[in-house]
Each structure stands twice: as structure tokens, then as C-alpha cells.
Length: 359
Image 1 (cartoon, one colour):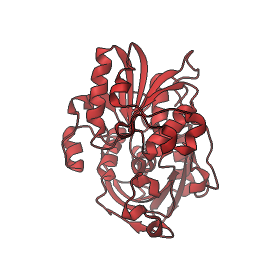
Image 2 (cartoon, one colour; image 1 turned 90 degrees about the vertical axis):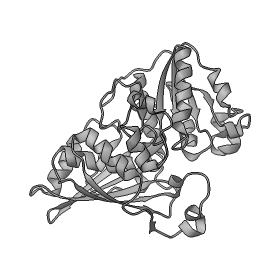
Image 3 (cartoon, rainbow, N blue to C red; image 1 turned 180 degrees about the vertical axis):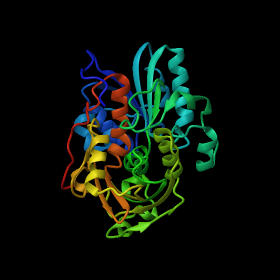
């Protein structure tokens, strides 16, 4: 599914919005090590002028004396030519912020590509977004300019910008889309996903407090989590079928990663080997998805953009297990993967590092 195989003569200037959160830190790490991208600035209005290394000390060797910039400072860096904008701004804030940057780019004749990691451009209509997030959409006039899908499920799009699906959504879509598109199961899908504490963001809350999270697993927002409508809509776009998704998210006692189990009734008498082979064939051209013969494990993929999928079948039902890093494949890495595709770079550029194994 790679769109190109060569690097440009010069690297593409890249701006990062929402600069102090966990996802922004991962985006920054990936951009600083990317052979085809060149960091042109990272925005944080609340910390403008302060050292990036003070917020992300693990990036000190790469960030050097880099400082956070204000919105106005970033806008001054727009001009004719190519520019990539990666937004890790929060849900509900990203759309209005991006609207200003997109307007500014048009006025400056900047060839701008935006990859948004918030939920603001994952829904087809403002009404669908507002039904889930309970507030008006920040830039409904821009919805038609954004595609939303996993790179594995949409080969190309003529829309200039992309809204990358969320971390839980990524794991569910990797399981659900082949099940539906290949007619392996019916429309009732049952999913249980366990996520690490980084999925709750950088600001501490009761459920991410270490004494509460350590050696503990608990469900939250069962059957009403906001990622479920997102997945249903994106499944329908990818397959033409609208599933009935029953999703129970859970908090796990680890920092990074998602382990997702999706179950459904089989449509025919099909064995595990046959279904597993169907998944392998479906993702044969996807460089970051591996369908394993056993059960996938978080430690094999944490810290990487890779995803492992396991399949088992019994008594007329199928269970698909998906493991991914919520901050990489489920956010920053998936966004970089889309940026590579949109910029005509090799799809794997800057994303080839393996998992950390013993993290």
C-alpha cells in the first residue's frame, strides 16, 4: 500500500500543533527522526518561548535548544511552497484552530497538507460529530476537505487533508473492516479493549493516578464510549455495511498500548486457519500490520507503529485480537503514515523502528 519509494531532494517543512501533550511528544519524536520531514516549529500558546526539552526531557538530544512557539509565530512561517501541519490539539479545539491555519495558507499560496489527530474531522457531518461530543463543530465548512480512514483501508483520496481515527478506533477498525468487507461475520460486533494510562492524556486524573491504576483493571463508559459511533461510521464508509457495535473499554495497569478483542458470529462454517488466511491476504500489502499464527502480545509492538493481529474460531464464532501502541499506531505514527502517503514519500519513512519488547 506504499505510494512512493524515493525521498524528495529537500525535506518537507513541518509544523506541530498542541505541543505539550503525550501525542504531541510522540509526533515530535517521529518528526525529529524522519528522513523526509524537517521541523519548522511546534506550537504551545501556554508555553510559548519555553524550552521543549523541559517538557519532553527524553527528547533533549534531538530537540537541543528548540522552543515552543505561539500561533502568531507559526503563522509567520507560512509562505509559497510545501508545508505539513500535524495537529495534536484537543477534541473540540483542533477544528477552529486548523481553520485559521488553512485560511492563512490559502492567502499565502502555501501548499498545505493537514493531518489531524483529534476527533474533529472523523465524522462525515457536523450533526454526527455534535451528537457524540455535545457541542457545535468548530469548522463545519471544512468537513468536505478531510478524509478519515486508516491508511490500510483507503488506498488514496483526492481530499487535501486527513482526520486520523483514534487509538481505540484504530484497533477496532483493523479487526472489523475485514470481518465485514469479506463477509466473515454478521453485523453484530462485540469488542473489549484494554488501554494504557497514556490514553487518558497528560493531565492527571483519578483513574490515571498510579496507586489506582497499578495492578488494576476496570471498565469505564461500557457500551456508551464515544469511539463507538466513530467506528460505526468509518466501518460503513470502508465496507458499505453499518455494524451494530457493542464496545466495553477498560483501563489497564500499564502506560502504553491497547489490547483489543472483537468477537462476532460466523456467517458460515469456517475454521480458524481459513479466517486467519483471509486476514493475511487482506493485509498483505500493509507494511505495519502482521497477522500472527499465535496470540499477539503488547510487548512485541509497544513503541512502534506496528500492529499484530491474532484470530481464533470456535463453535460458530470468531475472536480477533489486535495489539497496537495507542500513542504511535493509534495516533502519532498513524498520522505520520498518512503524511507520508499524502506527500508522496515512502509509507514506512520514519516509522521502521521495531517494538521495544521489555518496556
